Image 1 (cartoon, one colour):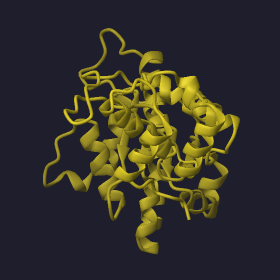
Image 2 (tube, helix red, strand yellow):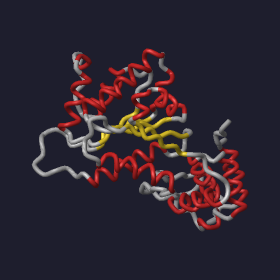
Image 3 (cartoon, one colour):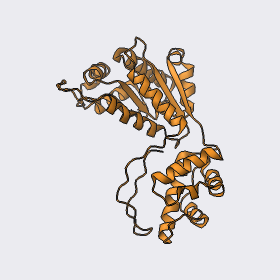
Image 4 (cartoon, helix red, strand yellow):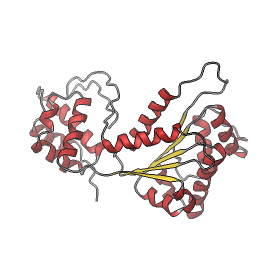
Length: 286
């Protein structure tokens, strides 16, 4: 949904050496990005908003965070004559495995460019908050937040408390992205639930929605005749094999294009899709 890297492959033919990232502007993703960007534009609040973005793996959550970050970097350019601190309107990171408040704060400090020393852990949370103000941060974005579910009850509460402190003391909104189970975790925490906006990315449905996605992806990948791939017989098959997951749509189209090039065909055929599906097995939702 946001980025496809095309490289030279001697077996399957030649692709452009690099392809610029492309944004698939479908309704759910656009709404999510606009909500995230809108919250970051708001004036500081006493109880900053937390956006919880959930969906199955491969639905484009990371791409949405990346696009929101890109837009906010444009909306909030570095001011002239600013402080010596690194300017960072969006602080985006991935939550560590076996998360604790200390690990989260150390990960944020690393992204903020602060040197990690043996004594850093003593004041890591306070230093993160100081740097949020010094670096002009408008939004903290944390990806893969569902890993808090692998932690014990105590560690989970510690993580949620770290989020609360970060938003309140740092006076900055936050967006967390993860699998669908993360939504329930935040809903079960009364304080966070009341300050949260819940956004969800549903699986793609057959018919026009999937055809629209296939058309946009094929154009972004520079495949020949995107309308051809969006025809009902192709679209229904690709949707069925993808289980409605955005990442699977991308992989099927990408590998089908590689197979077509190997056979010196400009347009993807059903035979190319069949051969591509023998090269990899798309994950199917249970």
